[in-house]
Length: 403
Image 1 (tube, rainbow, N blue to C red):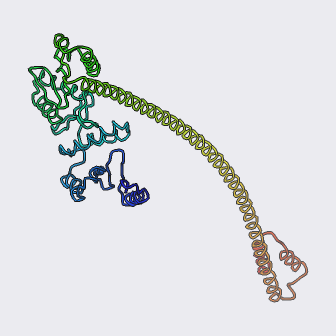
Image 2 (image 1 turned 45 degrees about the vertical axis):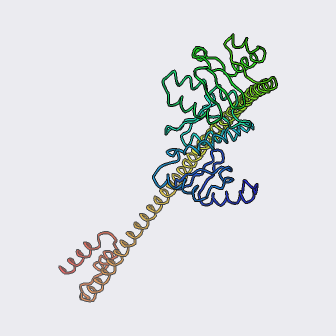
Image 3 (image 1 turned 180 degrees about the vertical axis):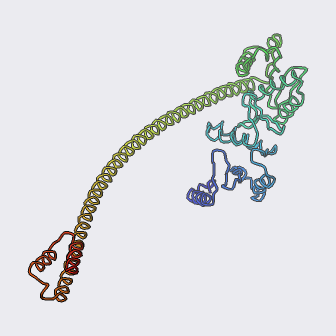
């Protein structure tokens, strides 16, 4: 859908994948699922080439089935070269965002790209040269850089890398003649193989090529040979064409280098802006935390005040209840005393009634002769006496009996 610029369909599929727990990372051309599975997003060139979907699926499934992550998987030689070619094309078009994505993707599979050496190396031992991907085939800069890398490998006895570079150059149409110390291309271009002393001195390849080409144009063949320089053979038109091509290549390399530096500077600026934004966010977070702490302190103070108020209210309620209880106790005591007094009064009334009954009995039992007025008055007096009624009655009874 994206290749056909059907953005609505592409967005719909992305949304559906997100709902299924699959996240797409366009920058690294990879996808990750919430179950831990990962995979690579195929490139447009793979789709254009008609690569079967089954092979792409098998490429993603096999590492997961073996319990490996994508970082444990290394692409084969053809897949790596395809990604390197896309990277170089993106750099040539100054699409540095895309080139960074491809570089990151290669790193994901354990492949490092070394631009200054014009080589790539994988962690499983695979390696290759970066040459011939630009329009027009291999450039003088690429050839000279790889020739220098081959000489370094030979000096360090890394003959495997030296043979690899020779074969890659030969595939690109460049032949190295070690005895003559010269390299030649099928289109008539040729150049010297730098000496080991020049390599050790840290000579600049671009400057060396530019100076070499200018000297080749200015000097005659005899003078060039006398000065130990190799001149491009052919007619004047061929020499001028080669010179122009080299100047264009040099200018293009300088422009590419400047553009890449500008891109790196923009990335640094973006990183600084992101850091500043993070600092601002951190400050805002600290301010929010301080506000929360102040709010918690205020809430604690309010809770303490409410607690004191409740304690005071409880104390006031306790005092009122104590006073009410004391009042109830006093009332109960008074009521008890009243009941006791009432009981005593009833007792006295009962005793008085008993005395009256006894008096009546004595009066009825006594003879008229014996009931003189004095005795009767004494009995009545005894009857109406409120103190020691039982004793008085007993004494009166005794007196009557004795009489």
